[in-house]
Amino acid sequence: MAEAVAAGTWVEIHRVVLEAGQRAPQVPDDTAQVPLEMRVKGFLVAPGAPGDTVEIRTPAARRLRGTLVAVNPAYAHGFGAPIAELQAIGGEVRARIAARKAER
Image 1 (cartoon, one colour):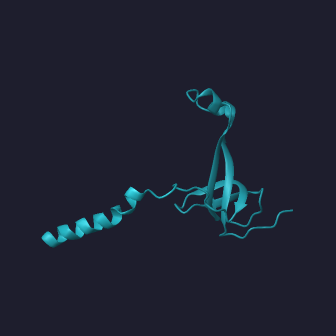
Image 2 (tube, rainbow, N blue to C red):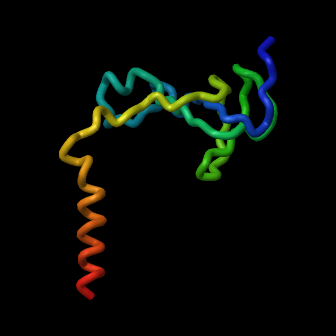
Image 3 (tube, one colour):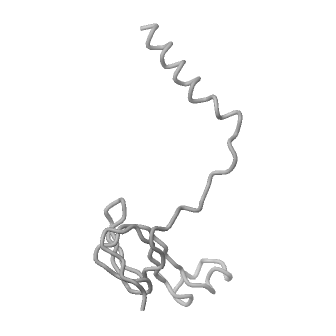
């Protein structure tokens, strides 16, 4: 049996929102053949174990139910390599704002 996870722990849940046969008729055929799934991270409302149906509270205060699939999940996305042309923009904008304020 899986070990219980304490309430308030950062977790990820999974739920099938729509089965393949329930998808909207206008979606492409390859999309219609798979279920619409939801994965959401949030704080566990009550103790639970991986594989249990649990309730979470998201940072936006939404309460959602689903199967507990991960404990303390990390964010795995990124925004790619830095773009050199964009790295100086913050300083340039602050300098322009300061110059405008000085003109007044």
